[in-house]
Amino acid sequence: MNSKRYALLSVYDKIGIVDFAKVLKELGYLIISTGGTLDVLKKNGIKAIPIEEITGNPRNSFDGRMKTISFQIESGILFDRKNPGHAKKAKELKIPQIDVVVSNLYPFEERPSVETIDVGGPTMIRAAAKNYENVTVVVDPGDYGKVASAMENKEMTAQTRKELAARAFYHLSFYDSQIGSFFSEEKYPKEITIPLRRTNILRYGENPHQKGVLYLMPKTNSPLGQLKHLWGRELSGTNIGDIQTGLETVRQFNESAACVVKHLSPCGVATGSDVKEALDRAVKADPISAFGGVVVLNKPMDLSSAKIIATFKNERESNVDIVAVPAITGDALALLKKVRKSMGIYTFGEIPKVKSEKWDLKYFAGALLLQDFDDGIEESFASWKVVTKEKPSKKQLQQMKFGFKCVKSVKSNSVLVVDKDIPMTRGIGSGQTSRIGATKIALEQAGAKVKGGILISDSFFPFDDSVKLAEKYGIGAIVEQGGSVNDKASVAAADKAGIPMIFTGRRAFRH
Image (tube, rainbow, N blue to C red):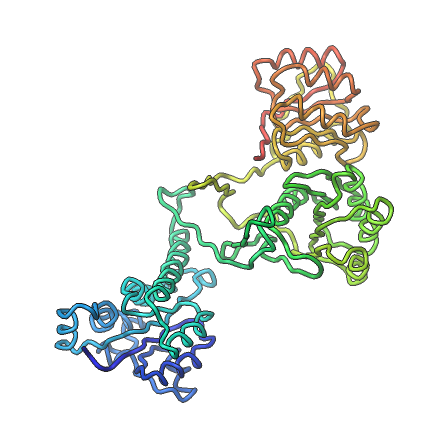
């Protein structure tokens, strides 16, 4: 067996590499290095062997594409130290015994192109990870301290090397999945991997006994990737879902919009002439459900809108758990800090009009649904059909469009009541297994404001019972999908009651 031990260092992210190299030198490793990494080591007084002295490859040949690809390097990483035949052949061929490979790859998302695709780096990493029983591979600078300590204390085990190998393969998969997406013109390829990078460990998942971690796609323009914690509690998995629900609701409106979310479903949505008015309406839409809810706005929060939260706390003794806004003024933040010490306050920047992601993802155990986003609501209005003798007024039509934007964010089966004049919800029946059940909840919740209100359904009415119930409560107009075998019965019931009804021709399920 070759008595000399080598460590190969070739990294894009050079954080910590100098200190780690010093440890390797102290442990007796001869360091082989490349390009920029070699320059950094030399500048810091660390002697290293240029890789071309091992490979024999002319330096920078083919613009450096071949600098690490060679029989000597890959053999030095891959040969089995425990196999006498391998050891003998390595000695005969003067193959260096490379026991440590430290490498990480260029972040492809920063400059995606054919020229930024690394070939040699992944080859070395894959070889080292495959041969983990003999070779230590490190791709994450965050692991340098742990690896150095294990080496210094002679505690580097096969299990630790196996864990490092797993990290290496994930690193390669993350990298390659971005390249596949860059090349592919198929929206739904036959085989696919989705790159995700861990951002932070959450307070918990859905429940306190469930651990939860948030991952983001590289270069996503999702506001979730810009969340900045200013005050109060850390986020749970449910909070993340609530914020996303709120974002998908308020992003549809150009005017000031506010959404109060509870258990991944809006309990109050409203627009207004300014943020204060929109938030005041959204909270008043269902103040009971707003207790412990998440508030999301599409415009920055100022002092006047922050006072709505304070009033909600003082007058109703009700708390808001999370406030998530594009930005917040200093005086508004100072006020909210006094309202409730544990209330989480977050900013997320401007909400982009167009998402950077290709798909809406839904995970099931062992399976992942990829689908188009349920966008294009504005465009769908042109295909709406009035199916009753009575036509909706201009005001009713305006309220119908507002309500349909809201209902698509509510958990199905969902039915909601919109105020007859003000762009705000008055009653929301969500997550029900029967359409009539959702209708009853929405109508009852609307209370005295139900008279003349607009009833919005996320799908068709399978029977005429919801329409007849709407008549009893004094509903002024109805919006539903249409398409049921009993459509004629629902239309007849609406005609009898003199209620204008529109068929959208579009289902708005959300599960």
